Length: 347
Image (tube, rainbow, N blue to C red; front, side, top):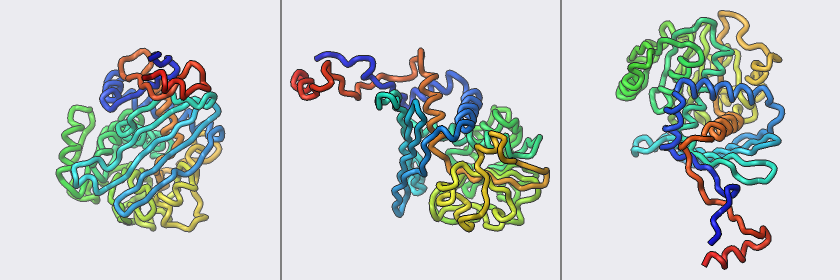
């Protein structure tokens, strides 16, 4: 049987190789690189095909496809969100992604994206805060200390210069886990016993909880003037973290309004409630934070262009390394019209 050509072999990055690549480059550098890659693509926002993610909801979770493309590349991510998985010893979120060449339609990268999504989400949070948080912010409260929490803390340290994190979770063992994992990172870690204690002195508040229901992680009286809120949890209809009154007095920034109005905190508001697309702030066509007393809110739900950015980053960074395997996943007959003949000769 004729071996496949190099064109027919698709680089595959396994979980093990993704971890190896991150450790090879350095976690802080990867987070800074991903933030820069996302910002570069947001600055050419209008070049992309854009659509809200395609979601299949069930009583216990959601399975989604997140596609986008520019003139050169197409990318998508498959991702689930099943909060009940944690009680079964499973990940709440798992993902994989694919990058393809628009000119041929051939895939050029297949990769795990469970680890990569955690990195991407954290980098996106820190990137947004770099444009919206009060100047000189050094302390962040993190409410919800599950699988995303350490990545969020380290991204804000690497991108925004945060030096203190105040942790709270309804499960104290989650807070202990997060605090232990952050030991030796250079961050000052304060473990708290209530959300009220966690937000004391914090200029940035990150909420990153996973329950599939409307919740009130923050009430209006908990949020003082000048705070930046990074609302990472939620991300599906019927799941929110913030009291509506907080939204009513915040300047709200989103990725892609048609998706965020369905899945984000702003699903609680009227459909025409004003929000600002974050890419416009980056491009300088819309204001970000305008005064020190303003409450800013990044209603983060994750958008396909962010995944596209990190897929292209990984595709570029694995070249010349050992952190991938070639997959024979494309049929490659000598005569492209003779696929059947290729099957016959395989015997």
